[in-house]
Length: 270
Image (cartoon, rainbow, N blue to C red; front, side, top):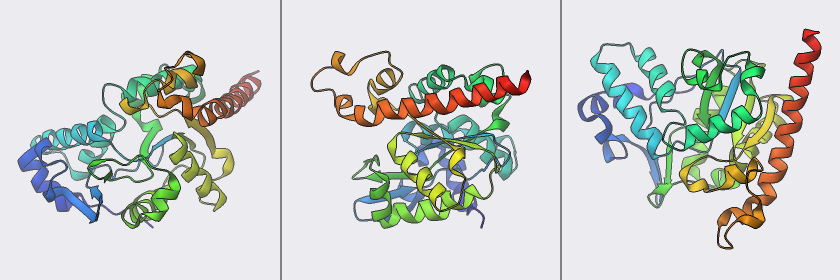
């Protein structure tokens, strides 16, 4: 089963209005009461990717970057396929906070070495062929006007979001490299990936684990995750205090798995 492409439906309005078309009635893909799903041109699947990074759903920065990219690429006459590839490359996990923090965590665990590239930044440049960035709700999910940030169980309980997960995310797994490695951004994507592994859609050994979520709303959790800041050093009202039950074990899982991969690569090279 292929991932459905909605681009033709929204191409003209994005061409006419550019970034201003984002999160408007013209680009509303589905709605059910308080829950809304807005179109984002992220349908491109990089089937040869060796690393798949999975978020919950695209946020406002990613939506703006994707719409801006599509508008500019339409004007220079690219094909739809190339436009969607460029939108994913420039928009996925884009923004002033998400990508820098994501790169910080990748560098910490030596992902450039694992992927055989010079720098982690190259994944968004001339080695973008190695990265597939996606979300368990691939189109932009909002609840009461705010980006959805609930649990995976919440996704499954919400008809609009569950439909996108099953229609737009799950089919993409069969289109990806069967040896690709998966990283979730936070507990919600990790729970989704572990469930997909349990169902045989991917192998359990493909799921490396999870990074801390690196959005602006994530606060200091990346620093806590990487051990740069202790829980005790946080303000008593900092919500990250209540995420340590996930962050610390998630770090240990990621470190153990990546250490094994580094050791295996070193042994193979000897």
